Length: 152
Image 1 (cartoon, rainbow, N blue to C red):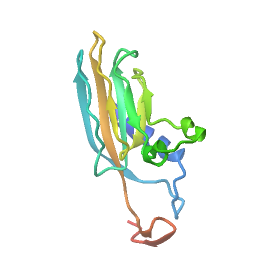
Image 2: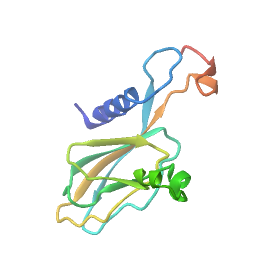
Image 3: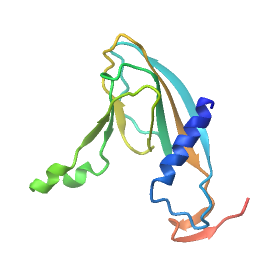
């Protein structure tokens, strides 16, 4: 299977496992809007950023040392518990880290701020990344009070 088709499948699998509300019970439709390949050598890293104008983003690891260059996602709810002085707040993480596993996709909401640690391995880290946009068929207050636009 070509890599871009595998990326689409990974994005749809992600959506299938989330509480996606779809009034017409049809599978969501979408489009891979941007895709790129990046090669990172020793000491390279990706600064913190988000992906705009998309709903879902992904990264696929084609080559990497798994012990270095972790991708880190900042918890978007961190501000709500950062100033809490209760022990219950300790169950939340401000940053979630994932190692780069060759042959694996990481799919995430595009609004999640993320970055990577410096790559300290001798082997280049090669990634394929992209953004996915869902086709909008409804307008209104979310999907609960939506007005259908068209069947096309």
